[in-house]
Image 1 (cartoon, rainbow, N blue to C red):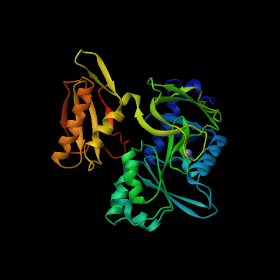
Image 2: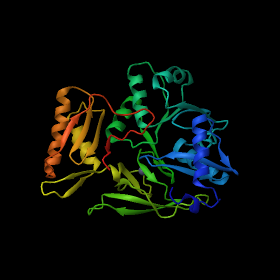
Image 3: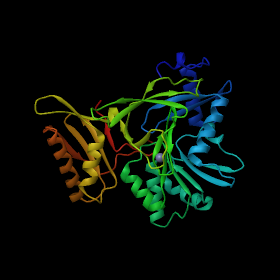
Image 4: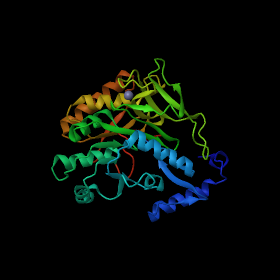
Length: 359
Ligand SMILES: [Zn+2]
C-alpha cells in the first residue's frame, strides 16, 4: 500500500482510490470505478486491509475463478446468501440468470437477518466463520431453518475446532476461500482442503522454522496487470498439507495459523525475548476442556495476557493452567493472565482468537 501509486499501472493514486472506496462503503453504494477500473476495499483472511484495483478483464477472470472453484458451475438457478461488511461490484458481477446474490450486512445483528434467511432459503451460504457460528447457533435453537447445499467460509481464519462444530451443525464439508488484496489465493477441493491456485499463481515458500512446517507464501500473480503482484510476501503463517487425497498437485494448506505479528512475545528467565506461535496457545486452550468453543487470548504486554473463555469458572481455570504450563515450558515465568468476563470480539471486525496487541 505504501507504494501503491508507483505499482499500479493505470496512474491511480492511493488517496483517490481510498476516498472513492471509503465513500462507497459509507454510502453503501458499491459501484465505484475510475476510468473503468473497479476500486475495492479488501480485508484479507488474516486481516490486512488494502485497496485493490481490477480492470474489466481481471474482473471477468475473477468471476470465472469464483464460479469454477468456489461456487461450482451448475445449470440450475441458485440463491446465494452472502454476509459482507462491504459489498463491491466485484461480487455483483458474479450474479447472473443462474445465480441470485442476496447481500446481508454484517454490521446488522444476525438475529435481524433470520426471517429473511428463512424466506430466501439460500442454496449457498457465504460468510465469515464468526458469523457462520452465530447462524449455526440459530439453527441449533431451531429459529433458523435453512438447508444450504454449500457453505463457504470467507474473510477470517477458520479454526479447526470451529470447522468441526460448523460441519456438525450444517452436516456437510465447510468450504473455504483464502482471499486478500493480493487476490483469490486458494479455495477448497472436494475433500475440503485449501489448495493454492498454482495454475495462475507462483507460490514460493519462505520457511519460518527448521522443520519446514510453517511458511510465509511469496506470491506472484500471472494474471494481474492493473495492480501487479510480483514476489509479494504475505505475513500469514501457513502449514502445508502433504498429499491431499484429492490428488491435486497444487500446494495444499493444512491450516492458516494467523499472522506472524500475532506470535506472542515474552521474556524468559534469562531476560531473552521468546516468541511462541499462536497455534500453541490455541491447542493449549481447546485441549484444556472439550467444552471450550468460544475463547480469545490477547497479549497486552510482555508480561500481561487477557483471556476470555466462554463457560464456567472451572473451565476458565483449566485453560489458564494450560497456558501457564505452556509459558513455563518456554521458561517464561512472570506472565499475568487476566480474566475477561465478556468476549472482546466486536461485530464487523475480524475474529482473531489469538492476537498480539502489544506491538
Ligand atoms: Zn485436495
